[in-house]
Image (cartoon, rainbow, N blue to C red; front, side, top):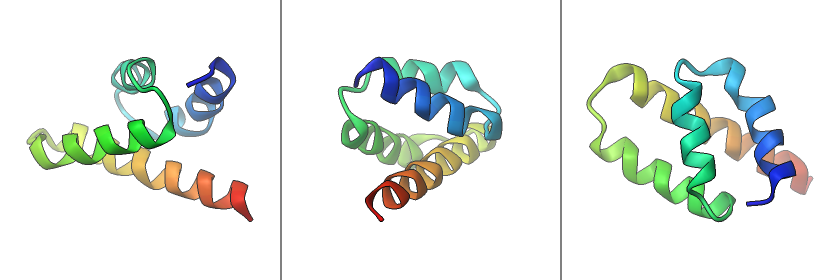
Length: 72
């Protein structure tokens, strides 16, 4: 994932989540937006902590909204 795309995602999503470091780490370890989406979908199945599950749901929702709005 290129630095501009990471920055855009951080800017658009970070204000809505509790654990920004968790999100930054996911961004750093994802090769593209689809890889990030796949990782988040895997994590949501395993995660038991409510705060982290909520963050994952918010991130997924925001990514879907951002990618759909950029297509329109």
